[in-house]
Image 1: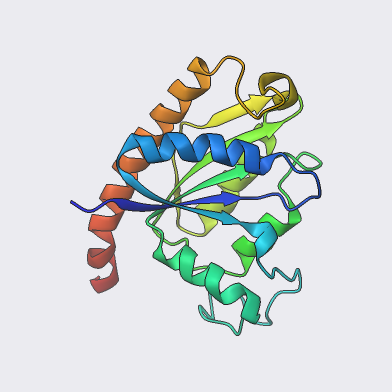
Image 2: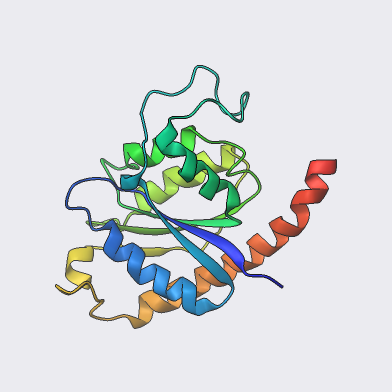
Length: 196
């Protein structure tokens, strides 16, 4: 059986963001898991206008998108599953992440999604809860397990390595196992749903 295509999305584009450090840590675990072919998507490298097309992608699945978004759209469409790496911004998600979600529809449909959060006290859980609501509307399945880094600035050293890696590694493995199960099931079911 071929590897599942997993897109790891770095949701923050803020200057000085910590997201790439967290994404690199998680990507190492995803690659060593063995079930996934990993594609890291950094939203800071995409053209993501906040103004949306006149018709929502639910009604017009392929709206005219900026040229700088074409590669991103293709990579989202190719993914069998996603892991979103996100901080909390004002008790919610970054605007760039919401924009990329809202610019797309079929790319999320019937796919499994996991989360890695980081922030101050909450560890990104406030953003993750909002994302669960959003992706439910898009007919995506969010897995129960997640990874969270509350007060991440105390958990990682100056070289971007976790000071105590065992517990987060176990959480990542549990989430990846769930993600694999659901992604396998949804990949198998997708052609059936398309025919029905």
